[in-house]
Amino acid sequence: MNQLAEIQIENKEDLGLVVSSRVVAEEIGRQHQHVRRDLEKILMSPNVDALIFESEYKDSRGRNQKEYLLTKDGFTLYMFNIQGHNDFKMNYINKFNEMENQLQNRLPGSYKEALLQLVATVEQNESLQLENHMQKQHIGELKPKATYYDLVLQNKSLVTVGQIAKDYGMSAQALNKLLHELKVQYKQSGQWLLYSNLHDKGYTHSSTTEVEHKIVAHR
Image (cartoon, rainbow, N blue to C red; front, side, top):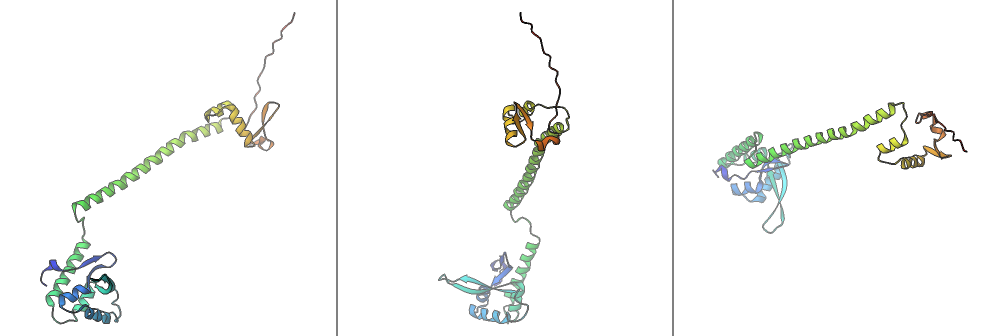
């Protein structure tokens, strides 16, 4: 075992870089069950459970079988208790170190990965810009309404029901009916009047209008 390209080290998402006990058994010419037994003895020692992990694989008959996954330190601990196989030991340790350096200094592994990262960044920026534009539009839509309300509330002069109804796209009759249903006003002798509990709210004002009467003489 002298070729680094033949080394079978895996990068497991939850464990990091590991090598299977089956690979170790095959490379050093031992039965897998014997390698497993040795690893189980090592696992009886304290502070090694983060170096060697129990796992499963399917054999040629599709049955689940037990194996162990060894980190670099777990591999080193096991291999340096075995005589010989020095080239195998050093090749694997060197490959572990090489792969660790690659992961620590990782850049986009391909042109495709770099493009995907760029697209994701652009999409995120566009989403933030769109959200910002929508917020500005919403504020712009609310501002004229708020200004209108302020002007109406601050205006001490009289505004007719017809004028108010027009601003809301309603007829004066429909608005009067709505105010009646909302218990704001009631009709008496053909005139709409506020309910007594609203008299002092300043919702209405009275104005005096001079009416000129013409006297018509009959012959």
